[in-house]
Image (cartoon, rainbow, N blue to C red):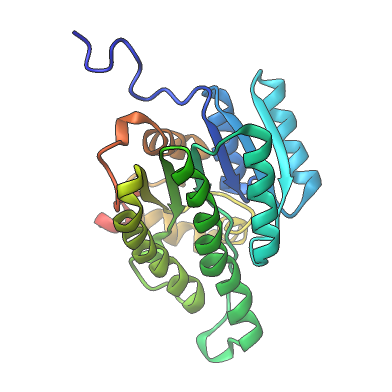
Length: 258
């Protein structure tokens, strides 16, 4: 007898998956992966043209997707977006809480405005998007929340004091959410990507010296691709991870092990 009555443990087809920051970088990669896996992908972010491009790619590959604009630093905007998604699709099964922001700057030069800009996206935004989505999930019997951490969740990175602070906070927030939302059948976990080529990390990749230093620290000696994150994301969104909550999966090519 099959443990899943013939069903694929990793099947996410038909699930309504909300992804913030889906217009570019890793968010776009998550969106394409879920689209290919048969989910209905909700692409959320600030840049409508970028979101439309992600939606177009998913649809051209035979998937289902729709774009919703949101400013994750504004609570009214978050509430309106989540309410619209719930009204249009009836539920939200998975949240990939991906929207993030970084501004490289020496600690002694960080201004209150830069501090607020990073905190408002990486902590406040993550917190209140998850809160609103969790309310919908609670009403519909459960769901999966995947917050996005970083190498900076575990180690300090020079000139990234605020960013690392937020990413460390995301890990702790995820643990607390897992405890409080567990009774509602909501699993909360983190993905912590290492170095992937995105608009945010492109300057590091384009600098030969910086790129060589990074690659020398990665046991696999190469940067990650969006495909490398697809498997862990699909795992955390599927029934295969139903007994996994409050955890962080590092996807870093072995950086933190070295």
